[in-house]
Image (cartoon, rainbow, N blue to C red; front, side, top):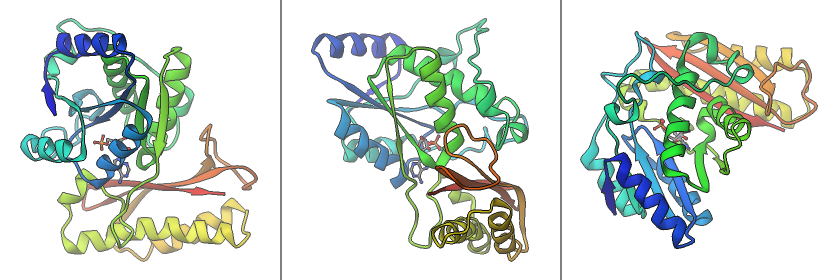
Amino acid sequence: MKIIHSISEIQQLSRDLAQEGKRIGFVPTMGFLHEGHLSLVNVAKQHSDVVVMSIFVNPTQFGPNEDYDSYPRDAERDQKLAAERGVDYLWMPEVSQMYPKGEQTKVVVTELTRGLCGPFRPGHFMGVTTIVAKLFSALQPQIAVFGEKDYQQLQVIRRMAKDLLMPIEIIGVPTLRDEDGLAKSSRNVYLNEEERKQVLYISQAIKAVQQAVKKGEKQVQKLLSLGKDILAQAPDLQLEYLEIVDAENLQKLEVIQRPARVLIAAYVNHKRFIDNGALT
Ligand code: AMP
């Protein structure tokens, strides 16, 4: 595996691979890799000739009171894991390269970012779409792979790629979970045993809603109160939102008649967790 830092090198790589007729599969991450990230690499490999993973903790997608400075980082371990999984190129740019001096260009997806995490994390999705557009622009991959773990982000990026006429196929990958159901996340290292127990109510609530839908419940109000009852059993969990929305446009639903998604965001001891599941 080759490690690349500079933008000119990544642009050169892109030109070389295009000339060789090779398809680039791209996996953007913020590092501190876990099996969830690596499952995206597996999917990228299935759809491309060369896999490029980026590791970049993007400052513009963190709010002023969020964990940019303390976000877990371990470049050495990440390099080892990425190489073992068969990543061909690991791209680790510097902040000053991604945001050149005087930069003033932003990418904004309007409607899909209005609900769910949008109002609670002002500017977050603008940070995400701006950095992903920059990464796409420098590398020009044919395929890019994202996790359903960040479901709103996945839909926002799909929309951006479509709206900006980017010749890129966006592939979504189901959430990888620990055995107890907890969605794998770099931020799980913040959790002690007691906190982990509380966070587990999130995935349990999602599962209960999914099971109720499978048994035939279609009324969203009923499904939401079922989910809330489960979350209420976690004394230290503060719910930010529990919503059931259309799986594509993310609009709230009253009755489940088409592919839908249940999404939860909650805090445990000032640490924020999100999770979601398909309802159909
Ligand atoms: P992050 O490093 O948290 O920005 O995540 C990088 C990519 O990995 C995003 O597309 C995430 O949605 C995806 N991802 C994170 N956690 C998981 C997981 N547990 N299962 C599948 N994909 C994930």
